[in-house]
Image (cartoon, rainbow, N blue to C red; front, side, top):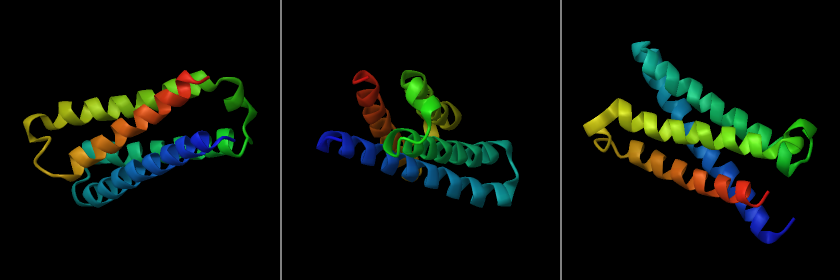
Length: 125
């Protein structure tokens, strides 16, 4: 494993974990207070990110999941798709209020960086 590959893998795991934690935390806190659908979606989005980071870690870093190794482009397209839909959905839902709370734009920057590293890995396949 090259030094650059290690850095890309570390960046993907770190960025995915950060955005997953943020979505889980906000989803748990707000859903327990409101019970609204949007808050449930935040919670499920956080779970989705952790599912991807587990599959990425087991499949690519630890080389334990052959079905992921056999179709890596499909996996990266799904991973990038989740992240891009999350970014777009945030701005569609919050509209002009998107920048009112700093955690939203910060999370979107994390997700943009995640897409960059995922696309970089995808291109190298």
